[in-house]
Amino acid sequence: MPTNLAMEEFLPFFPLKLVVFPDEKLNLHVFEPRYKQLVSECVAEGKSFGVPVFDTGIMEFGSEMIVEKVVKAYPNGEMDIVARCTRVFELVTFQEMVAGKLYAGGKVTFIENNKNGEAAQWSRLKELAAQLVEILRMDHKLNVADLTEEYQLAHKLGLSLAQEYDMLQMENQSQRYEFLISHMERAIPFVKEMERAKERIQLNGHFQHIDPLKF
Picture 1: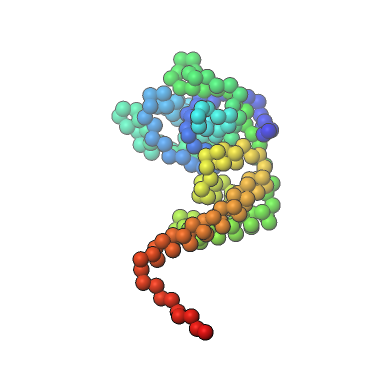
Picture 2: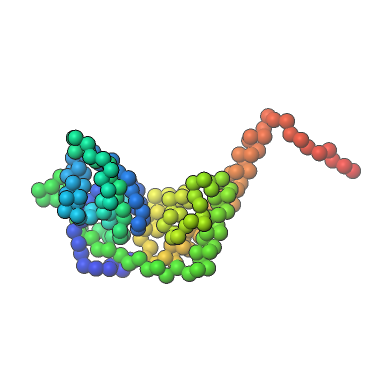
């Protein structure tokens, strides 16, 4: 289980069916009354808010967010904002509605983020990422040379919500490295075969140049 970093703190909650990793930015259009109230208070008071992962219900882990920018404020109170994840938290308590407020909230503890990955792991991770990018012809979307941390890869590699959620809980960078390496080592052979199948399908019905057999 993750190790708690500090004492319990209270956060207002903005549950979403997604995972936000540390330092990742999230663009949100805020339109529901409860979240307009939540974000307005966070902006006015300089407070953070929590994004617990929601799947079939509220999950145990989520991301602390700060509002970096209000891109647009609409006359009806709706907002376009840019928020950034600062830390990962574990839920301690959950209130469906905070007293006197429209939104949910609860107490959380923050978990460690140990930067203990090894250079050899990072090198292997980037090598596999480069292979996958080349197979999928994704170089216009992901420049592997510019990568500085594993979280930049997480949403690019086709992880499921459950896999991203598992990775969110990992305190140790070395564990996250191995998680992504294992995922790509399994995925690359499958993706190669899918790409070959696509090429065979595209050739179907077209004239093909085949050298005659020589005996």
